[in-house]
Amino acid sequence: MVILVVAIIVHGGAGTVKKEERIPKVLDGVREAVLAGWRELKRGSALDAVEEAVKALEDNPLFNAGTGSVLTLDGKVEMDAAIMRSNLEAGAVAAIWGVKNPISVARKVMEKTDHVLLGGEGALKFARLMGFEEYNPVTEERLKQWQELRKKLMESGETRHWKKLSALIKEYPEVLRSTVGAVAFDGEDIVAGTSTGGVFLKMFGRIGDTPIIGAGTYANEFAGVSATGIGEVMIKLVLARTAADFVRFGLKAPEAAEAAISIATEHFGRDVAGLIMIDRDGRVGFAKNTKHMSVAYMREGMEEPYTGI
Ligand code: GLY
Image (tube, rainbow, N blue to C red; front, top):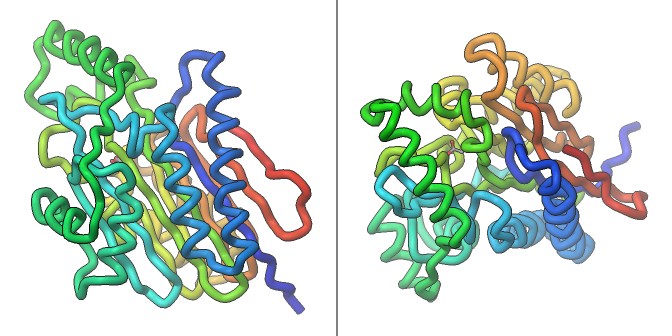
């Protein structure tokens, strides 16, 4: 007999943390987030747990989501977020700006509309209707990074296409500081949530995998999954849903996570993707093909969260 174990796992994005001294701060950030989620989970709701954990990551300027989101080619913030439950209820926002916590707006889309995904002006209009106040998520550090990276891109004379940006990402892997996410299981419901500022210097209007159900975020009766990395990869491979399908066909979360990431590596090479997941028995899984992906998790019976990168 399998005993169901209440659990929560969070990530602070896959990529390369270039400055070593940042690593302890990043680990503290995911630890705080998993504990914020755990407090809610102990009250019984995976949905509240995921929202609180993702909010903690969005509010931490170290991570590329909410406050501290990276800037588009034209220097704006356009954030994506999604949340999904194992009963297939889902809500998402794409290319939204001017709000503090996109994950909470995504939850409102799920709970208060007949739709799954609202984008741009419409998403912002809905957020204001729901009482989300005006907020500027741009930080000084991100603005400085944007100026430096844009200059490099201009100097190389390659500003027209994303292919050129991929080359830039290879040269400066710290550009890809992508995304935060959480997955929780409360004994009944599995919930997955993801939030991101996207990728540095992305084209205006570009929407990544995070708000695309099945690509960056997915939950069903078998598993919940939150992915991170280059969004175009996850969209093309429907990676979050693929990882959940591996559980449907018999794998446990740790093996399913590895199997899904190996597909990303096979098609697109290394340094493109990572994901976290929980299966219906409460097992946690995580895998990456990048140098780093900060992760923290708590399961019933643990005194302290696991943290790693
Ligand atoms: N994985 C986040 C993005 O590509 O937008």
